[in-house]
Length: 260
Ligand code: ADP
Ligand code: MG
Image (cartoon, rainbow, N blue to C red):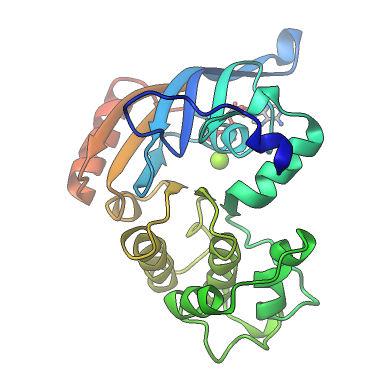
């Protein structure tokens, strides 16, 4: 990471957010196929906070996660992880940043079927040539309630347990930020509630920063704040959300024609 470490840190008095988008724009395709997925999004994700991102299908939620996580490149504007401007990085530096600074939880778990739960959790560290910190691994495994399941392969685990493995994998490298894109989308409501509890605990007890895309007002109510996207723009935000307040906003946006 020596090349990344050379990037100067801003010296503003406000604490630097874990991630920041400023005027972030992403255009896919050309001509008739041209789609503006992000249309000048400016949003901060403060450290140690749990932020939910909501909005109609196609409003740019996944694109925002991908551009901030270095999984996709923006067309214009700025995407930062900590003090690092992603557009200034080489492919190699981006790969290192994704590995060392970012955790990602996908809707579809994305586990390797031939590896045990423990091997899946520690794989990113091993690829990076780092040894898992045994104490921290124990904390993470306990936080997501996987003790006793570590030798199981994904096919021997329920969907909820597989997603717990994915959450543990995202947490184990102590990333600056975890992006979770509809992490409960493939789970029954009980397993979904467990995953939301683990994500929230990782913020409250481990100091993690989490940004989670969800369609579900009940899921969003686990967060400290909800950011609403529509048509590739930030249209509203809500602090200390309750599911009722979130639902109310969603219904109001629909009434205004932001139906995606
Ligand atoms: P959301 O996650 O909110 O459903 P997305 O970020 O996936 O929305 O998509 C935003 C818009 O960008 C949509 O119109 C979608 O069709 C388009 N889009 C997303 N990814 C691609 C891609 N790889 N190529 C072309 N268009 C894309
Ligand atoms: Mg999406």
